[in-house]
Structures are given as structure tokens and as C-alpha cells.
Image (cartoon, rainbow, N blue to C red; front, top):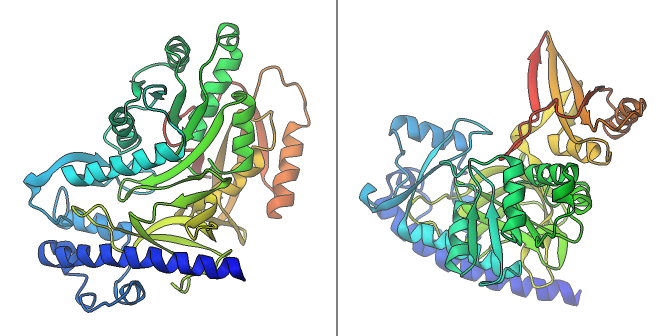
Length: 426
């Protein structure tokens, strides 16, 4: 009971700070931002966060897409004249059409500040750590802000775009890289290729931390166990963010199974997708974010589509238990059973034989079935692999899925967000 009262007091103080920031943001936005001025007719008289949440309508990606179509190419969600914006990004397009995004110098600097806070929590040491970024440096936000923030705090940053995976591994070894920032999928791919190369496997590695983002899974025990086996002694640290909002959360240093929300930068709600009501601690809902730091293109009650479980740290900080559990728009219904890709991933990662996989959504008329294709090492000769995986899937979902085993090197690999679910029609 005492702990609950302490958390309540801490939550009250956090929410007071958030309301002060949000009130200042709303005053500016309602004067100069045409997109939000059309939406916020009833919000001007809000007197608290609770009142704001009751009056402010939810934002969706569909609204943003429509706004881009009405006001191409950047939309109308701009608090400043366009000449005040200095950075261009766009979403990756994995959950809909790509969205272009502009940031002012101050907003970009604010996101760098959030990454500096994350690096500090992760124990990244200026002047000592060497960070490697094996991503394409394309227009999506990705790790761009992490790259610049690491340089700003005094770390050596090494870009790895346009290189083969083996070349990246050799560079990491030669230049004594201590931290890599990548997706969980690509961190596993790096580890698998390292183990297949005698010279790389026997090398003197300086790597001590892997910062993962871009996909759900960095907080899942199965993914972490796989990475621990491939990279012995290396600490895995999860993080999540969105192009539309910036860095949102980071792994709790005291609990590897949850993410802490950066609450000085976000007013976060976790809502029941059906009722729209705030869920209780321990319940699961959709993460809805209001940005308190990104004034140039603010997001007010933005439905992220991320499925999360609500929890609190002892100091009152909002946490996401288990990290990002899945995406609401990724859920599919197969013969009456709701299935999230992250749940299938968790089952398949229990099997050390599975190097990579693909799930094929096979539709015959109105019926939908799933076929799972798993890639195993050439050294595996166990004919029972497919049956054992099929049994685990059936026990988990009460649904039969065909499982096919293919040899190593058959399925594609991914440097950024993995796309393992394929639609087929027969």
C-alpha cells in the first residue's frame, strides 16, 4: 500500500510537468498550425491532461496520409513556415504508404537530446565507445538521430551503409567496435555469419553492447536468448520509436523485460482499442502518444498501432511490460483465431535450428491458412524438425499450420525491418 501511494505521488508530479508543457504547446499550435487548428476547436478550454484527453480527438496514420494528399508533398501539420525546417525523413512504409516528415533545427536537436539520455542510461561512454551503424542511411529516420547524438557526446561513430555483411563484420573486428545499433533480425544475422567464418569466430572482439530497435522483439526472452548465444557476454538493449514521434522508450536498466517511456517528451496513454478507455496497470492496450518536444510537427493523441502492456516502475515511471507486444494492424484472424506475428515469432525462436523463417498467408476463396517455411543449417539432418515446430504452433494457437523445412541460404535476409509475412492466393 505504501509503495502504491508513493507511485501515485510520483505520477501526479510527472503529470503536472506534462500538463505545463502541453499547455504551452497547445497555445502555440492553435495560433499557427492549420492542421491542428481544424481539429482542436474544443481543446482550447482544457484545464488538465484528463480534460485534454476527453476533448482532443485521436489522430491516425490515415489522417496523416489524407493530409499529405490534400496538401502535397508535406501536408499541413507545420507550426512554422516551411523555410524553418531543415531535416527531411520519411517512414519506412512497412505498415502503409511512406509519409514524408520535416523537422526544424530545434526539434531535431530535441530528438538528439533524447538519444543522449538513452545512451547515458545504457552506459555508453564518450571517448571510449565506438558505435557502428549497419543501416542504409536512407530517408527513413532509422538510427539517424542516434548516429548524430553519439557523435555529439564524443563517441566515434562508424557508418556501415552499402557494405556486405561479411565486410561489416570485418570492419567491426578491425576497428574494435564496442556497440552496434541495428534491428534484432540483423543482429542475429551478423552473429550467424560470424559463427560460420573461422577467422571471424576466432577474432578478438571488443563488442559489449547491442542496441536494437525497428522491430518488436528486442524485449522478448526468445530473441534475447538467441542473441546471447550468438554474441556471448554482450548486453542486448532494446529501444523503440517512430518517425512520426521520435525516440519513445528505452530498456529499463533494472529490468530487461520492459521499456521505460520518456515521459518528459511524451504524454502517453494506453487505451483499450475497442472502448477507447485507459486500461489499468497490468492490462494490454494501444499506445497513444502526444509529443511534448516536437513542436514543428506535433502529434496530438496519435494512435501508434503498438500493442503494449501497462506497468509502472518503483519511481512512478510509465513502463511497457514485455516491450512492444505487436502491432494492431498486423493481427490476422485465421479460422476464428486472432494471431499476432510476434506471437508466432516467439514460438519459432524456441527452436535453435531455425535460422530464418517466412509465414505465407494462403487464401483459397474465403478461407485463410498459414504455411510456415523455416530455414535450418545444412548440418541439421533431423527429420522431426517440421513436426516438432508444427506441434508447438498447434499447442500455442490451437490451430494447425503446415511447416516446410528449407536449407540454409534459401530465405531472404533483412538489414532493416524484416518482412517475413507473405500473402498468397490460390
